[in-house]
Image (cartoon, rainbow, N blue to C red; front, side):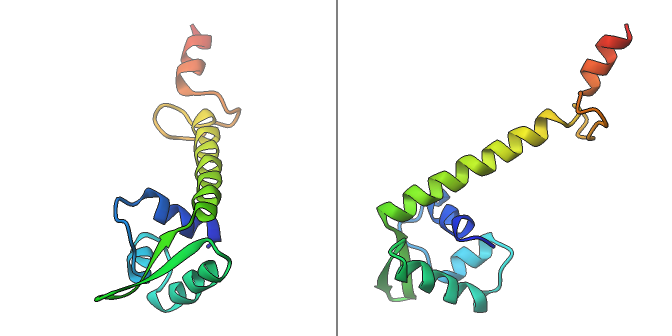
Length: 107
């Protein structure tokens, strides 16, 4: 789990503040481990820390938002790259061409 993936959860949410447990709900990480990770991000200046009746809450700093935006564009690029080598029925092709391309060339 990268720091950027954690920061991206903050960037995608509509909530202004997140508990560590809220972040853990969005990622394949346990509540126990996420607390240390968000603390590290806070210490790096990527998250702000606040108090809430529910517990400690975190928000993105400008630096954190910038780093999260970079991660989002990388994920999007990876998804686009995968889509370009996947057929219309979602099955990867051996040559990277789609089913539609194979059908058109067979005619």
